Amino acid sequence: MSEGIRVEVAIEDPEGCTVAQASRTADGGTYSVTKSVDPNAPETVTEEFTLDADLGGADLPDDVEPVFQYGSRTVYRFQRELGRMCPCECVEAFECPVVDVHTNGSRLFLVFHAPDMATLQATVQDLRDRYPSLDVRRLLRSKQDGPGHSVVFLDRDKLTDRQREVLETAHGMGYFEHPKAVNAGEVAEELDISSSTFAEHLAAAQRKLLAAILDS
Image (cartoon, rainbow, N blue to C red; front, top):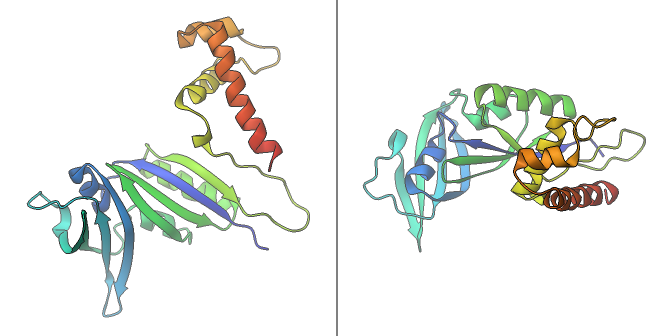
């Protein structure tokens, strides 16, 4: 089986993304974003996306127009020039196919497949250079037969926001160093919580991380 990595990233209000602009205008989310190229006009891309809203007379970007409506959802279509290097094209430039695109408000989510770790790192770095708000949310590596490095990717959504804050603060202050640069009380003071609350959050986060690693 060949190596492959499935990646989900999120970008807050990406410049030049018509779908994210429309989603922000609707204050909702988009579904079923599709792209196609006309063989007679290969320099032009046609995109369609579905909104849980009818934007009506809203100021739609880039000549977005409604083409179909069912229930509370409306399908919109627009055309753009190929080579504009929107987030999808940035990913595809590294020969990583985008398999899912959706939004939540002005936040764009992309799911794509990278063939190997080197390509993934290059793709993520290019995206981060263009979009500093990039957040890598999920990574899943396909299992491989034969010898090789054992790599475990963790789903960050397994942790609560508070658990992530506790881990990041403790790590940044040197709590996990040997010897420790700070003690639990100092980290708790930085977080403005009690030492016992810090210990509870830290233990819960570590249990989740260990379960993900040991079950892999």
